Amino acid sequence: MDGRDYKQTQRESGWTLVELIMFLSLVSMLIIVIMPQFRILQKSWDLKEAKAEIQQNGRVLADHLHRELSSAQTVTAISDASAVFGYLEYQDAEGQPRRYEVGSKNYVYFGPPGNLSLLAGPVSRFQISGFAAADLVNPTTNPASIRLVQIQSRIDSVSGPPKTENFSFSVCLRASSNPVRIRLLFVVGNTASLNPYEQRLYNQFISWRYSINLIRDRASQREYDRAWPQSDAAYIPASCGCQNLRSKLSRAPIGVVCEHLNCHDDLWFSNQEGGLVQDRRIKISNAAHPITAPYSIDSLVTVLSSNGLTHLRGSIAGGLRELAVEPKKKGHTVMAIVEAGDMLQGGQRAPGRRVVLPWGDDAFDNRWLEEQGWSIIQRAIEWSAGAI
Image (cartoon, rainbow, N blue to C red):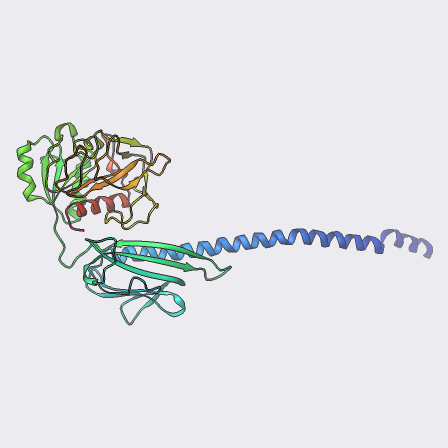
């Protein structure tokens, strides 16, 4: 190959200046178009990470507050309900002092007073309110009378784009230095031989340190009348024969907690038996009541592992107060209470506190109850008995 052929080949295989400029222009245009998309994706990713971080902090704080305060004996000091960064001191189940407060860099700290450890945060709000059992509307200034603690918190992101999220926690102080031993009248089919459903309930009641008095659903009205003075509350399970029990507990001057939907009309919650709901979650519609105080308004609480909820039907009691509804569009009332002295269906006044639980028919199995379901049973019994 001579020099002329070589130069000709070189010219044919190379890029002209115009081609190079056009190529660079196209690449620049692609970068201009694509880069904003990358920035959007990066921002979206950062926001998701910030939200996940905040929610993790919220879960840590919620779990810790529920675990610690639910077993506390008494509150010893509390900040003013209007304080943006509040504090709370209490005695735990062992009588040891513990404290929550907002410390360095707006993080929440917890531990023995004077020796606190970082718990969660940072927060831009940590307001604490305490309520007495007799008044769940107005915060109390007397720490010793507090049985319900509500905390409004705003948790901030640590990394990524600035982001905040509000959380609300409510916890009932359940333990006491002098715990009340509830006397429970437990309605069963056969007092000499409990069926598996009744046995599971009985074992749970004993673990809660209740004093149990068994009574047959077929017992006479006279036997029920004699049992009332020795009881603080009565419990009607879904295994009960409502056709046998009928209205024997309707005039009882003690608390009554009802599972079975066939007993709704016998106890004058409504003028009809209840209906079934194909769901396992309840939606809290009243978070100010002691039974539902641990939850926030509109929160979905999984109480069962399998569909088996019940709801009230027909004309309901005038004094009935709704606590929870089914989550679906119909919004049927699934859990409610009637305070002593308030109006029942038909014009009668409740001689004692009444609770209708959100489950219970002939096919119901209490092995479906989740931890939250058992917790609602306990709070319902304790409220009906006047313990909270």
